[in-house]
Figure 1 (cartoon, rainbow, N blue to C red):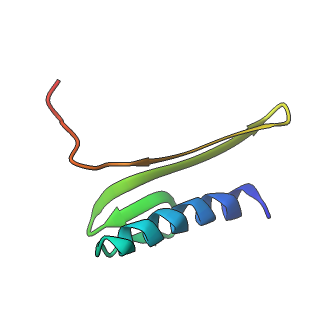
Figure 2 (figure 1 turned 45 degrees about the vertical axis):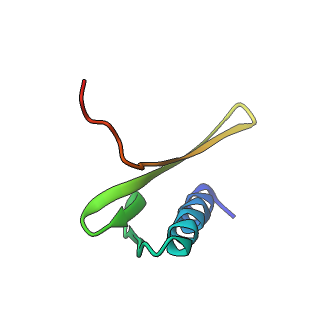
Length: 67
C-alpha cells in the first residue's frame, strides 16, 4: 500500500468516527482531508523521510477562531 492509500485509510477512519456521532462526512477527489458540506472538518497527513513515518489526523471540533 502506498502513501495515498494510507492517507485514504486515515481519512476513512475519521469518516467512520464522525458517522458514529451522526455526522455525514466524505472525502473529496484529489484533496486530502475530510469534509462536511463544503467545509474541511479533518486534516490528514503522512510523510515518510529517512525510513521514518510521520502521520497525523487533526479533527476540528468547535475551534476558537479568535486570535
